[in-house]
Image (cartoon, rainbow, N blue to C red; front, side, top):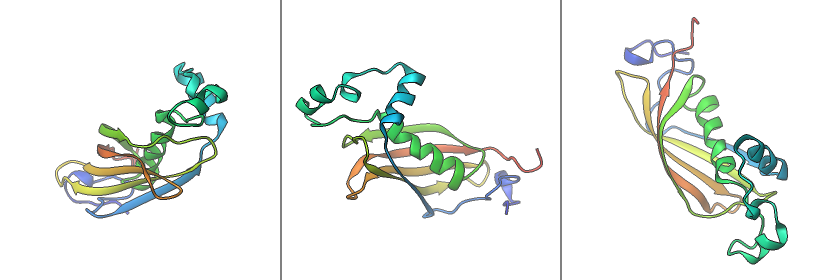
Length: 149
């Protein structure tokens, strides 16, 4: 149900409210590393060379940061604020590496919402299965009105 007031007219999920939260979970796979490499050319050996990766401070193969933070794209585009949403800005701090076959949870929380434009400030994070923070930061999003297109 769309919000018909101010700048949120035509936005599919309507105007969100501060405090709203959305989460998504998935388990990382070696295929994620390969797909990201195909897209970007990132062939860092800490993603592919298991013997070398075990000798690093991480002690394991790690998944690229772009793969890990990609779950936040799905949270904002599918859930909150929802379809039509794109990032205007992100500020991310990487706290803990994520390995292959580890379950992560992306979380977005609405901090503030503009009335005049479909713009939100979000607190964002990616947690591992034990609840430890792997990535945390903030984001600004813009939600395009898609109803009636």
